Length: 536
Image (cartoon, rainbow, N blue to C red):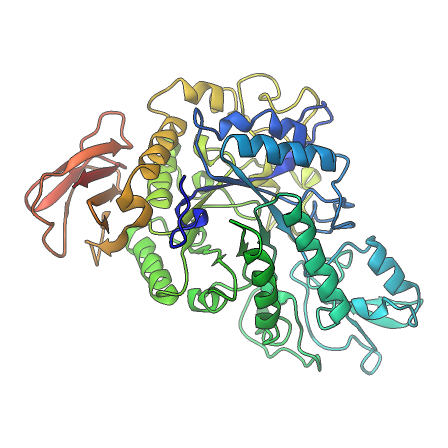
């Protein structure tokens, strides 16, 4: 894809999210690895999905208390996934196919086994003591009322040095002290290390939690179910020092051609997210609203319009249907006809203005696995079962073919496979022109070659939609009309304003036997059908 100063690759590209542990295992130990991923790169190339970048879940050395998000060494590769040489080869082989590589960087906290924390914990006088957030007891109790996301207090008592340390997540994930200039320098050096090695950018884990209020006051109460949700988090996240740190990070990224960063935000408000986007901030912040929205056109449109309004001219939208922390789209909304809903999701994700992120397996309509209590590995799942089953369900091994282990591994996979993998896999669907995989391939190619879908504005045609949704994408030389029927019956979709008079050419439909057609005053659609029309 050609790069231009006003339209960098991350604005026109599609990014594929790989949970490395579950993608492809090369050595039979049941855990996905970098050599396995290299062996599957053609899945993303011109003869496959033709995406522009792959984002890898954390591959750094880790005790796996939180499956890679507890990092023990920022500048190495966990031997279970391979080596630095394997990553270099991945970057090279991906580059030959026009694919960039992004890493997942969790720099709010480390593992409790990181050498920095081992030194910090060794003595109150250790030079690295102030590299983490240590506080004395308050009247024999924790320093304040802050809660951990994963349950319990956000403070753990260290009997040897007689102080508490802060951890937004597990006790095995102590928070770094970003207020210490040495810590900030060390973390920025980590960013430089990977960029110099050829990485094209980062997904930043819970980036707006890097700083805490310097006086550590109590958070005020609010309504919520869990203890963490019963606090307004105004003192343990979103501190003003964030912006100076993000500006420094952006300067480093801008010094390397074509590099970018997308942030995972603590919080759900799009105006809050837009606050962190801009030329001296992050390139993008994830929008998770589709993952929490009713699968209804009015609700979905409302979320798109809020996001567009929040970002204005200074930000750039990005959308996801799911990720490694969230139930898969088909499991949330696909009852009755999972393939049709997988295609509707693809059409929505890949035709909106912004950068789409595809979670591995979405292209074949993978669903969550169900686990018994004894099978659950995820820490929140173990703590809150049966009210919450954790995140393991959306992390099952990739379904490549119908063999015993789905082509993922010759050994026993680290998580069970979905029982439907013999008929829902890449091999089967690549031979079926009506499959979700074939629809994704066609839609990705259409998007890549359409000025309207790549650069066009977003103009809704159904302001108060019911069963269906319609919008225009308009760019110089082309207009695209995208229409959806979210109902299980045929739909005549009328517009809140007249459609431009023109001859519309249907270029793609999600239906095996397309019914979509444009009439003078409406569009007709078959059940659960999405369609795209173009005009010059």
